[in-house]
Image (cartoon, rainbow, N blue to C red; front, side, top):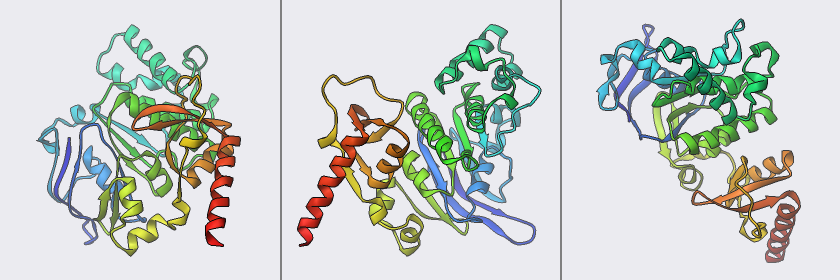
Length: 317
């Protein structure tokens, strides 16, 4: 879907931000770019929609060089979400959401229908929020609008540049869960920049870890966690102990399984992630191989953790 072929970005002062990058983002994939400050991740993202010109090489979208697309056509087909939400303060939420579709000439009834559909996707009642102004929303709600505004014209590609980094932990957790749900529902090709490895591990299909404008390791979250390529990858990910995983299957409520929760965990989950979720939520859904298999509540999870700790203590004696 998106291909970087020997892409280099060199600034006039001689700084090389991206160095001969070779990378392919698959159709429908959620790829996370991560790395230390100055590694080239945001530059890489912004070259896709030509906010930053590249110095050499070529970027292809759908097999066609990006610099052969008319700029408005290119950007209308790429949703873009920033850390700074930049909603238009004088416009209603509905008007903010439908800016691009209106520019593309959609009829008014379709604009209203699309705004309502997207608001419902992120749990905001259209009858309550469509006519409000941005100043009447919380930071987390405004960022939700930023995300769905990028989706309004049904673009093929979604670019997200540290969209949740300015939010408080609870709002950030909620937005990540919303994005996971949208990811499963819409299947957009997404390139997401973050500096937070936990966020990358939670959201990504694949993670591209960069350093000094080059790729250090590209792989699934499991591959980076369990097969780090070198000491830099190990140190960036952090302690293996922090990513100790637990199988939730023994603690699931399986009788009379309810509809999938908006908040879901994988059946084999990092202990840290389990504790983060249950610190803020009484229960969560559990999935295995993309299939909802049950729910886990706080008490059941803590009993399971206690049992495992007891077994490990016994093994150590």
